[in-house]
View (cartoon, protein in one colour):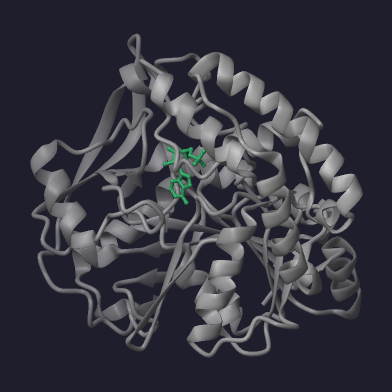
Length: 426
Ligand code: IMP
């Protein structure tokens, strides 16, 4: 295992990162979240137990691993405390193993309210956010009015900053939505309570991680969401508000780029996305229903049905470049087991020209034609395969073709939810 590995979703999130992270965690000492918030949801199945984690890295399920929530993450303290308590109920103690950055920005009720308000007022171009206040919290961070974890512990300073924030947000919401306003005192009291609970978990995680690297410890940085939800690189404006690409690990955890040894991309054997936005390879209703059911394609955070489509090699190839992906893990191959034929998108066509990239002009991905190649399916159950050679020939051909199109090595293939349904590639 490389000393510092970044793992990212190479599509629109929900690629099955949780399972791959869970497998890689055994070889590292630290697991780090560097962006996003409780908009994310990792599902990990261990034996008969299913864990859905939104903020805490799934490494917490492995004893002895240190889990870090870096300063690039936005934290809803109530959601975080609920997660800690839920884990404790299941016998997993977070004390001493969960470290929260004192520089991570905090989500307040006015962020959730603004998120909901914006979505409800948009006539066209709704983003389909998770309504967790993520965008408005990041907006405050960039506008330099956000409040960070470390500030919650200095009650006088915190109250001052909170008052001016609440005043501004109340005025805005009153004007635009006749909202009666948030009582600042209530928020202040609640957040002081949260702060007391979270204080012992909070520290300078940047220093912690850099010291760990100096000692030779191994670290896995786990990206939430996926490449095409990245605020800079994704299908803007239908994106989340953070850098979910590999570069986000440097800014969101405080690690220099020269310290990253490897980037692993997680790629679903087909494509899904939740929420609005362009999706060139999206299935028609019949196939959508079939794959959604077979793949259990419902959001871990909001329960929303995911949109499903064919594998898009243009997207993933671009993702390999932008993240500097060295290797990919392919997930959910078994979901395609019953397909007679399977398509792969190999290029986009727009105004008569072929494209292998995603230009920034709005409407490109909505309007482009998708160029497909068609493969015969394998029509066999792969969920019991234990080695690459056990896979049907057409499944192997499908994987080999993906590898060729995206130009990177495959390290493992997942054919089911459990840890043992994971095959090393070749
Ligand atoms: P937000 O992150 O709640 O602002 O939502 C912005 C967009 O990102 C919406 O389309 C969401 O559905 C999508 N999104 C946010 N988090 C996830 C995730 O963990 N998986 C997949 N999509 C996500």
